[in-house]
Image (cartoon, rainbow, N blue to C red; front, top):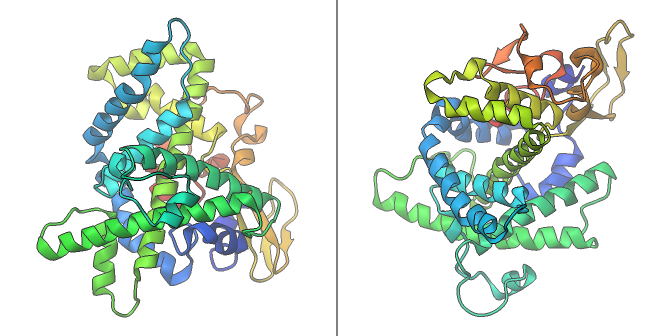
Length: 382
């Protein structure tokens, strides 16, 4: 039934949770848009998130991770003698933000927004005092604000609360949004200048959006929507990956035997084989237990009937019904995963004939939907 709901886009479209709640932050970004806007976003941006394109940036990803480990982790380990305490959430958010900005926007996240914005905007976001901001300050702020904004949006969705500025969390989110949009407009303008002076601008999401703006006269793409797409990509592109890394670290810390096996496997470059690797199984198992998208909602725009489940009766869904698809629950159902469904056991993936997608990562079958279902899930899988 979950696959049916998510696959029937015209019958069960995104509802007000997206247009009126997420939409306050993301506007017409890839997550919130529907119809022609969503189709265009997928057409323009989709190629940057296929496996072959992402693999081109593997060395950049490694270098960024190593540099940030030296910058963030090493001083903290050196400052503490026996049991250093490190906030892995902060580290992984910075790593994924820097990687996304470097590989998909060709900008250095450490220099992001160091030039002052309007006094009112900077003051609302806590940036007070004269002069430019130090390198890395805005990147850390963005990582924190994305997390805070996600909590605000999630809370308002769960409790069906309007995204009104009467709530302090919403006011904070709106102030952060204004600051980010001012920062991004300067980046958009700079890239537009580059595109007018060179025939070979960076091949990335920003260039693709600006080319669409310049060439598609039938469906205008204003700067506002370009910024909304970038905000969506920066937020969804680094936040979900960072949380996956956090949960992976947590699971490996709780299971040192698996951590030791994984460390030994990764140290043996000559014999590493992704399709049969423990690493792949760890990735799958972390995503099963802690899907980066815990749930999604849809609204029936007409009367519908969902097929029976496990010998039950078909389910009538009246027009206007709000449906919740809880991936967090589906990925832990004992009828699919066995009596140890709540346990972290990467080796449960050893013997399986389920359908696969994208280089052997299992998908869809038996309720495994850590990224949703259908074509919009493919970029998140990569």
